[in-house]
Length: 148
Image (cartoon, rainbow, N blue to C red; front, top):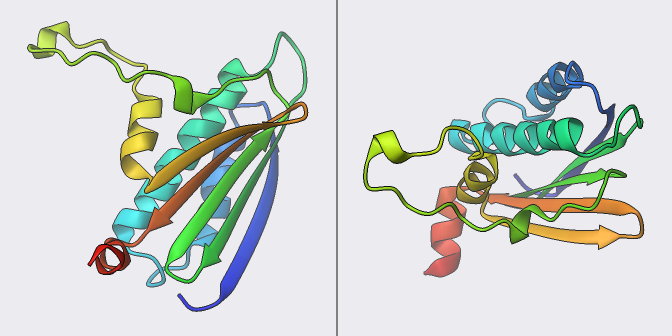
């Protein structure tokens, strides 16, 4: 993946926008450029984060603007979600307590944990009246070579 390549999509707080996001991601992530695992991780994290903004980011009928940006930098893919919704820092949400039995596990509320585990890194910042969540995804081979 030499060089830099970027794309941007603007969505609104309507769950039907998730279909637009999925189609846009599919067209942006060309087959053979990213591994299937990294492509899946990117789609999962972005769709989960955007769905959270749509469901929880506004008060009442307030219209939100949700900008999704992806940028390829060498072996890394940077993805950002910026929205004008209410302040929320997903990186500050504590991990749920481990459970010994499957029956004790809480159903739902695992999206943030999934994002943490599928992204190479996840950062949050509040810029003015906007939330900005940045993910980095690195191909496993590239990550291993950086550590060695």
